[in-house]
Length: 161
Image (cartoon, rainbow, N blue to C red; front, side, top):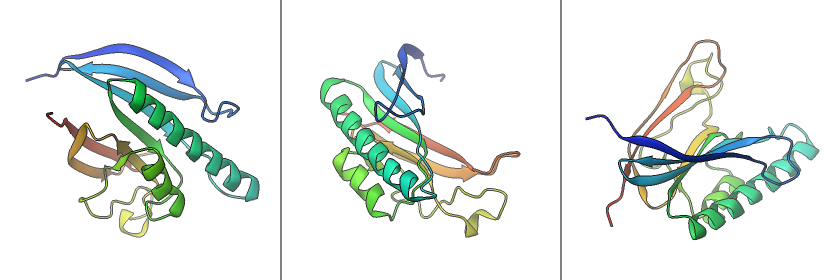
């Protein structure tokens, strides 16, 4: 049976407000359940300035997540290229401070970069985080031609109250 999906709204935002990177947020209604999506592409911490700015980005995303979960009736998914591994302190802080769950939990190590190499020797820097209203039923990475990142495929189900 095909899902009924309707777009409620979409907007461009910047996290933090002075970031030059536009992020897209969309609110969908899927079979009557509201879901808010945020795409994310964090700065690669290649030097001191970028490392510090990534910390600011992560703090802004955590604050946005909390505010969204507090004021919105939608389940939340934040997905994209985080340029950070799941075992880093800053990633764990994002999960905690943003009241988010990691879709990787329970699915083993699924490396996503650099995809041109065998994924077994890569690192997981692409993520899909979610709020408590969702649970992950399937998760995998898939190599895609002409990109340096693997596709992250995550299947969510709404948790019944």
